[in-house]
Length: 411
Length: 112
Image 1 (tube, each protein chain N blue to C red):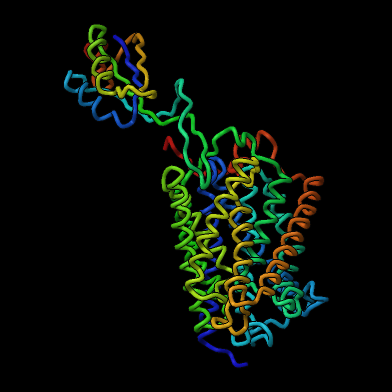
Image 2 (image 1 turned 120 degrees about the horizontal axis):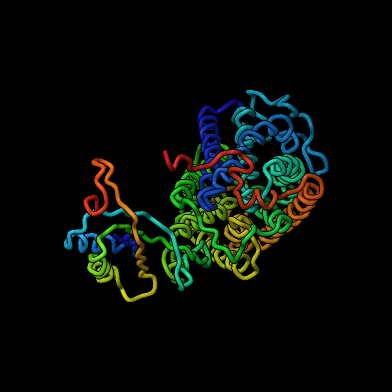
């Protein structure tokens, strides 16, 4: 197919939008930790732009989108971007240069790795995080991306729908984050000691950047600039709006309408609509966003406050639970009227689709949890996952990076 | 000479300042401090659920007055900083050996 300038322009802009989500996520996470750990938290996300940005072009893209092997993994035919050039691929995004599709996908891999870090902040050793991220990208992200999106991937063949990465990005990252948080153990002092967020305005800025970038994430996943992208754009905004209002209301019923809760709700709404954005009609995004906020809120309450699990920035509750709901909701609300390449869901009499979505959730969830646990355990028994006690008390900004965020208080 | 250190609620500063001014005590140093008393702090909301902050923001006012002025100054502070609830703060009175005004080198009573 010839290159479409409109599609190419949209996909390149979308790639830049998704790129901005990672620094946005860094601020979103960074503002939620104590002041002695804000830089290290920012760094954990930001470094993915470097590390994954490089690994992706060297071999990540090939393992995810190279020619299929048994439905499980891509081949090595795109290693070092060989055969990836200005011509469109014959199977992926056939109207844009494959280089554009490749870099769009690179931004997804980057933010997925960064998402996990929210569970390990304030105590994971930076060097170990780099090792974990490298192994996780290679052994978890690339296979799962291939299963779901790769031509010949087994979930792709099964017909499980994932428009923009509810399974590949959010369930994958959320479940892996939970495994790593359990391996690492709680932060010293949790939960008796207050872990007060050091800069909520940064969290709001980060959430705003995430919302903005998410238009590239979801509407860009149409891979064309047209009606489908517009549908995904609109469902994305509706779900975020509904979830933000829902979370605000729940926190209000509890006591006060919190800012942290409202912006968290927006992000959870964005998570939930991700797999569905290009398969459901605009108004279906209202229940998808609203229910996502309720599930995530009470999930968080249960995991953190009742069970005392220290998934520090609630990655599983936000991305895992939000992603699982989104994947199932896709199977409930999907309609061929929106996307002829999709399917009808439960509400249109096709219960099979919900079942397929469930298979995707369970397969990816179980694989990601087990693989992340094993990778984490291997690192723990070799170089160690966690910083020493003194380093943790001192804060990771000083102990891991030799810097502090707010210096010069006496000039 | 005595130094009065008063820990008060942030929102009471203006009233306390005004009262001290009306009694002709102009000089003071104010700093933002954190502290706790017998109460166990305040619950704040996380995304879901709450956490407890036990060091609360307060203001510390420091002023140095003549011995005989101490009761008047303390009275001005108490009248304007009190709400009757826990967390109203505390006042410490300390002896002061000497005072020097940097600009002139004036000492003690002349420097207050």
